[in-house]
Length: 406
Ligand SMILES: *[C@@H]1O[C@H](CO)[C@@H](O)[C@H](O)[C@H]1NC(C)=O
Ligand SMILES: *[C@@H]1O[C@H](CO)[C@@H](O)[C@H](O)[C@H]1NC(C)=O
Ligand SMILES: *[C@@H]1O[C@H](CO)[C@@H](O)[C@H](O)[C@H]1NC(C)=O
Image 1 (cartoon, rainbow, N blue to C red):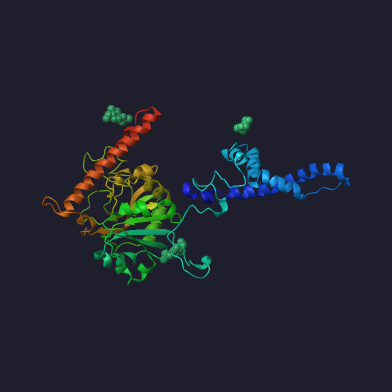
Image 2: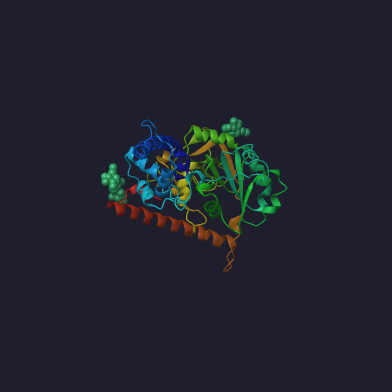
């Protein structure tokens, strides 16, 4: 089970089961109709007693107008499974000349399930030819970079570290997306453009889990990363091997690493725990000593992203504080969140969106942006604490200490 958005696929065996059942029921039902009708017929028309009119048009017409096959199916399904699904009762009570399928995605109940596609992808397609032949490869991973034109050559170099198994997405915050088109790979990339918007703003809006359903792993990365010592396919292998649902590559120590956890280690493939400065970690299994990666270059499994997407706040665009809360999305977090040491990156810390604030009161533009980052972090912490408390209050118990350690 890969989360709610997979339900269409998960449901399939059930549906084929239903089909078989319908057919079977249809046959049995037809038989009984036949038998009952034949008894009437016999008395009326004196047919031979072994004549079973399995096709009786008038009856079928009557039957159709009364109760659809679908409703019949629901009815039989629920009596067979013993489930008194709302579906069965609703379908029977509903005007069956119209479609109503309660098990469809909410809002799509009027459609026959066979036509419903509740998930999508970011695969470009052709305008001509057979749709089934559009894709020579179906990328299973996605990398999204948030970019401005100044980082074009850096991103060009970075993209080469991602194989053809990756869908490439660019979030443009400077409105200059057309200036990338001379790069061959950029012609096949998906470009989202909105002036002065952040990575998390874009991700919340354009990487909805149902729109990135085919991807096993989703990379949501900044533009100022040096990838000379990184290979994405190798990275994925390690992430799978070590069962990391949320990860990031180790960061080269010489470049202003803020947290020990994300510091690259020369002697291991992956690490999941670290030691911080004395007093920083109340619990060795909690951030920033474990269950923690930064928001600069995170990688999410499909399931983890499904959760994290829901946690991203629409108005808190800088994402500060998310890193401390990611652990709520996986369990046990200290085993499924980690840093990949043998595929590592350099944080170049070039000025980017952080510089695009507005100068005010004699302060440089970046000051206001930084202030907002800090403010958002506080707001996020407060919202989370309120939400957690409300949850436990509803349950009538005190929150466990660990849930609030942010
Ligand atoms: C199903 O619904 C009917 C009528 O509402 C009720 O009499 C019956 O007990 C229900 N059966 C189950 C298994 O819930
Ligand atoms: C792309 O994925 C396929 C299937 O997992 C794999 O066989 C192939 O080696 C990958 N391509 C590269 C360049 O690693
Ligand atoms: C939770 O925190 C309170 C106050 O900080 C403390 O008294 C209590 O012992 C803690 N409980 C656990 C299970 O650690």
